Image 1: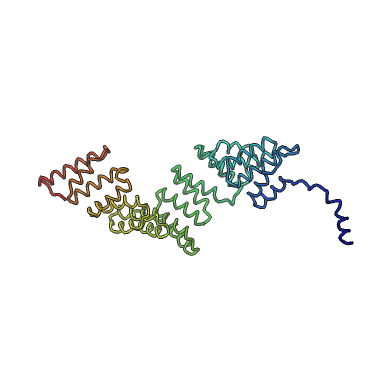
Image 2: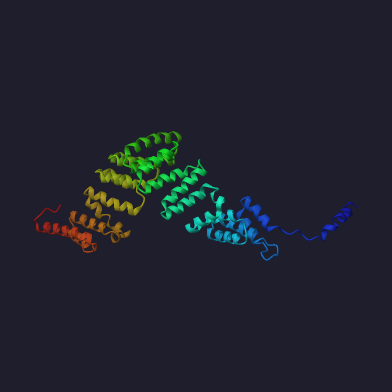
Length: 379
């Protein structure tokens, strides 16, 4: 009886058609909740030929999906279509600007920001995009004006002041960069690094050193490993600028413990300032095989270890460095001569085509001839 009653109650529903799915509404919810790919699949099911189809909303959602997928050109096309279909223009133009900026299309970025009006000023990144596009076009006054506008709109956003310092340095306006760095500094490690760079370029490495050493103590207290690397590199340049190459090399050497790519810098400073033995030890830590080999040849020549240079010939050939850099070929010829093998030296001299090396090659040939005739020592 109860079962019959239930069937009777359900009877009006059994033949009812299912309610139509609101694909645009569903896609909106999915996108809001971060389910981008699912929203994309739902949009594929939208009946775009239906009489009540909302083209502007559909293209807006499609653009948002493509934007979050990083498909910038498709996103821009979708937002353009949404604008053409009567979508909410100001917000859409802000999205158009972001996509165009990702595509390095600064003309579209700037025009979209202009049309977006207030929506084009609603986030710090939008001011950064305007400033960057003006900077790329070498409209420096407009770029700095955009930074100033961004700083007024978002006074707690530190990137505007820091970008100003960087750009002043690029323009070679070192004193202005120092003043901007001091004015904008909030005592943070990032600001200390920027100000120190301005001081180094402005010919005031001693002040940079004092600033960086204080910042280094703070970084050690806070255990900022990445910042410690940057501080060491800045300190290295500050020591170099102060005429203390060994102290600079030690900072590069410590930086190489955190990032091996700086072993070459440490080795080069040691080599250039009369410490080839220490340079050779650091060269062993260089990971780039070509950079390591080039530097090793120079260090071994400084040490007058000519047999060591000639022993590198197979590796120089294998990496194609002798064909790529004739200065290395000349260095190898010189090493063969000093190792007592003038024929092998001549074999390399004959292959030189660089006019800048002809005089050096002629001088080496003259030395080899004098050595062979017994008219001059062979060392």
